[in-house]
Length: 499
Image 1 (tube, rainbow, N blue to C red):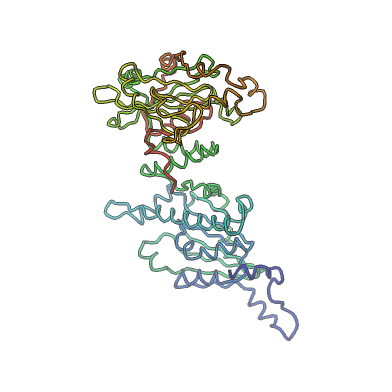
Image 2 (tube, helix red, strand yellow):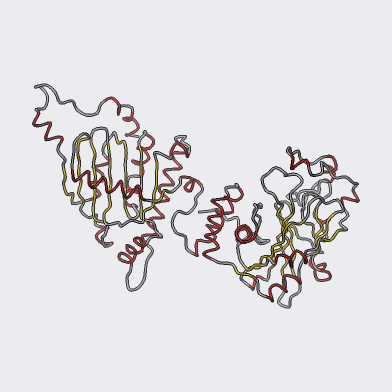
């Protein structure tokens, strides 16, 4: 790029030398040092004049959404950072009262608001994400190395004027124009004032405006670059954005970026609040409560039970989230629990008409499960130490030592491996638990101990009506981390890739 080729020469000179009689006169030199302020009839042409320099050291842009300049000069901004300079972008916080004033003034037509300003701000963030990704993947930067050179902030301050400040090795330039314009004025590229001074020269007008820009920047809220990396929405989400915000939260949760995931989970719950179950919903949850049975040698107790009911009653689903003490193979994974799920679908008359269970990253169903549910309630046999939930009839789908070819995505029960040794884990906590399954095959396949789920339900009454199970479980109920799992058996409302 043009600016990259010239960056190496930036340190060679700081401007033309003014000495001797053969060069410029002293008076001419003084004239060159005076600030030059001129009104440009076209702001876009003035921008082009700013970015036409070949040795830009820093750029600072302040605007409501800054979409136009960011879009027109994305390649220039990329080149400045790649060439060793700094870029600072400040836009108006979409959650501020000042943003709402601009929106109402510029968008309100006949009582209707178009959301144009918010959409433009989102588009600006998308372009900045493109620049960020290009710097990361094409130039080999990492987030830490970019943190001081590529900065984004959101301001709550008044936005009467839009600014662009560009500094090169020899001069400083400041472009400003009114930010309180009608859409027609904005589309026609309104006039702007450009102040240019030599780097060592003094200018009261330039200094006052530059100080104002610096003050607004210092008071603004920084936007972490990690949020660009993870595609977290920067602007204020709306209810229609819930699926995308939730999908991003789940992905961050899986990566154990818990603070970021929790912030997005809270956003989801604020936009679509869950509620405690009614008395009739509690009775429904008890009516279909699974019968959960373990081996005699199961090392972990059931810690918690949370029942989630979707707000759409026509779905007629119940999700029973079983939280066990841990997983015998993953004692050192920083998850102090093992999260399993059983789903029951009921008919309008209250009978069971569907049953599924979570089985090692897959959803298990069998031909016998529904008939068994209507006869006795859904029965779940729990795999020793690992808590894979086996519906009645599981033998038709899962082998004991090897997968059935027709269902290669289901893991086997792994009796032979667990009989020999669990996965290795070190430390005091791991030493507390069995190193292997002590017993024969018949012991491994016998599930005579029924867990008191009804007592657990009565003890904590964690029954909630809500759509986003991972959010409500982690933010409402549990003080410890769990691995996020499917919300519903078809996975239709989860695992969608973020925008």
